[in-house]
Image (cartoon, rainbow, N blue to C red):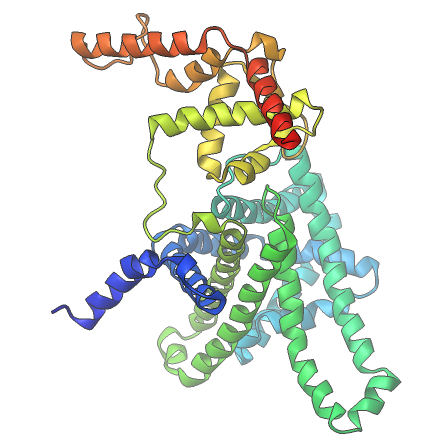
Amino acid sequence: MTNPWTRLQIFFQKDLWAVDRSSLNRVERFFLDAARFVVVIARDVLYGQVTLWAMGLVYTTLMSLVPLLAVSFSVLKAFGVQNALLPFLLDMVAPLGPNGEVIAHRIVEFVNNMKVGVLGTVGLALLLYTVISLIQKIEQAFNTIWRVRGQRTMLHQFSQYLSVVLVGPVLVVSALALTASLMSTALIQWLVGIEPFGTLVSEAGKLIPYVLVIAAFTFLYLFIPNTRVRFIPALVGGIIGGVLWQSVGWAFTAFMVASTKYAAIYSSFAILILFMTWVYLSWLILLVGAEASFYYQNPHLLSVGPQIDLPNARLIEQTAVSVMYLIADHFYHGKPPCNENCLVQRLGITSERTGDIIMALRNKGLIIETADDPPAYVPARDLDAILLQDVYDAVRWREPRDASGRTGIARIEAADGLVSEIDGAIGSALRSRSLKDLVRVAAGAGERKAAA
């Protein structure tokens, strides 16, 4: 007999994934999918890179928080609403209690003392670089979660990051001001005096912080990753992240009230330690929401074991032909070119495998990328001039070879002879068939199927 802890591990690692979804009703499937969803996210948090990214972002935040707020303050000052910076900071550090007020006032003091005109050209450039580097770190963390290999170009990074930094504060302050003005209208005040509308308005007011945080998280999940994120998955991640952020904030406040020993042990350092702890929890929650958004959009990647993409030779060759076919098919029929996200969604594979295949095809000179952001891919030459043998060779000869064409392993005559026979069989099967032949055959089969 195993102990309860071992049985629980066996359930989450094996039994939960052995259930046949087709044998369950809709409610049972929902709870099964929800359980698998939570288990996979918990696994990534415990054994993946999420906690490492959260810790790294804490350091980056400490270095770039004041410059970021200085840039935001200058934008808010242009609209005459710079006084909204302190209330916003107080809301962000509210879980720290009285210590949070001290930190917020000190940060605002630093921001007010930072004179952009005194910095000079070099100082201003370093200020903007510090701000952009923070958002760049966030994008790298999100791209890791979304299995995205490529990054935006430096020009796109600068323009998009700066627009977020400049427009974001205005949107936040506008949302807060709009909420405050709605709550102070005559209609709302009249409803407050009538029951049960007064109670409903009061309870709805308590949900406003949740709504604002969820909207902010959803915005980040939509626009920060260098891939196409659908709105519903981003909203699901925003809801999970927003509810976690508010709930953990309450728990952290309770922890602050119950633990007065930290101030006695760490003295004046207690404020800094607690602030860093809260920043770490905030980043961790944001990344957990990104994980939820990713798995909601890609449910086929839910698995209990470590996500190791084993180098299956046959699957690699099949993927290469499929990727090349999709790129050629879009080109042949005048469709918009395929980007990496399009290929991932169409084939149901990870971005890592897709990126490896794309790189192999590019190195072979079979495809080129467009100037779009993210880049799309088109055939490098006429479809008649691209042989299917070239596609196979692009992925079958990815290992570095010496002058004789060998991969550097010890020479075994029997094995070399067998491999040569396999190469000859593949060449005979392809018989100089071009990529255009494959596209035409597939198009003809589709027409016959539609006619039938």
